[in-house]
Image (cartoon, rainbow, N blue to C red):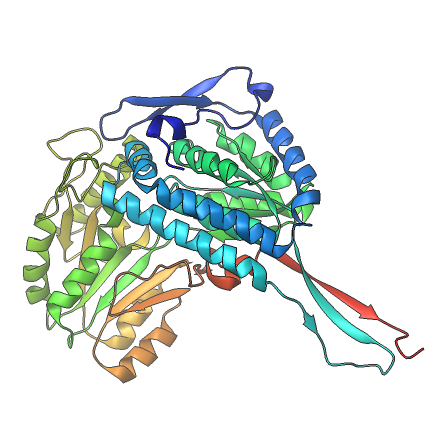
Amino acid sequence: MKLAVADLIRERFLTEGACAGRTFPVLNPADGQILAHVPDREPADAEQAIQSAHQAFGTWKKYLASERSVVLRRWYDLIIENLDELSEILTREQGKPFDESKTEIRNGALGLEFAAEEAKRIAGEILTPFRDDARALVLRQPLGVIAAITPWNFPSGMVLRKISAALAAGCTVVCKPAEETPLSALALAVLAERAGVPPGVLNIITTSQPAAVGAVLATHPLVRGVAFTGSTEVGRLLMKQASSTIKKVLLELGGNAPFIIFDDVDIQEAVRGLISSKFRNSGQTCITANRIFVHEAIYNDFVASFVPEVQKLRLGNGLEPGVTQGPLINQTALRKVEEHVVDAVRKGAKIVTGGKVSALGGTYFEPTVLVDVPLNALLMSEETFGPVAALTRFRDEQDVIAQANDTHQGLSAYFYTRDMKRIWRVSEALESGMVGVNTGAITSAYIPFGGVKQSGLGREGSHHGIEEYTELKYVLMGSIDT
């Protein structure tokens, strides 16, 4: 069932509710034009959606796993059938190049396909007996209503990652997409509806008041789990709010990924890996290489090979052929990138290429390489979220590991080396939930995605991610010998 883009741009998904016709605009970051107006939901609307999800949970959790699997698989098929149309919506509201949008949606859909299959494999246990007259069982049951709060940088991928796992486990969902990018979530919900997801099982809340609506989702007693992707600061707040009703909290928060290049590497291979990590989505990813450590013996050669590749990147509207870098999401993001570059230069770093707002204007920032970035620069301690590669040199393996671990974040880390002994040493020593060895691309629907320290709690993706939406129930069956 192929739909036109106009049919997928659903400007509302719930009933009118308390918002009484109030809307807010969704802008295209490439040109600032208004794409659509969506309902500006209030806390009372969130309450309504939670009640709807709670009522639907009583039915959805009783579906056979095979029945949920069929519905999710049908949703997957519709997404693949409408891939180009969904990708156009994503690019228009988020700004990333069209091919990147297709990759995001395709990968998100693969997670949905995986969840559809894995729904049939959610199983409990029969434990070893500890009494002659009894048997102990462990059941794995759905949590209940899940509040999914998703970010603007991957507005389809993060929605699908959370919702597919929750629905596969038998939960129902209230999803609040980022106010910058609600159209992708609404379009996916249109297809979910057509795939046979029952009313109330999936509820989309659009709002320009994320703090107020988020507080309702995090504190409401009928919500049994909160799944959030976003900043560490907001994650802390949601975790505190959720503690008032002792909810399960699944957090995927900020990163400050080190990218270490040892002196025994193939430089061109390492350059390709760094480009793929650093400049994906114009650097607006939580697992992007943020701090780049290059061994002093190959530092100059690496810079000489890296810079020309960065200069080949093409800025522009993501729907234009050949564009590899889109705009930043908004002016706030642009100011942060500018601040980080200015701070690094003031502290001694040198701009090799880029370093300023593009001649295209708006929120386009030139792909940038800074060398000799000091460790006290903001670029080395804060998540930049922009197309800026900050390079510094190192000499000793133990020292660079200590520098890489010198952060409150621990989401992802990368390093390049041909030494197998070093691969084991460094992989185990890095304080990170995910490590890429000789690659800058580590994500998949089939792996447990998540971090340590202040980069989050729990995992998304793989069977581990689906289990996050379940809870264990112990049952003792006694008197079986009479």
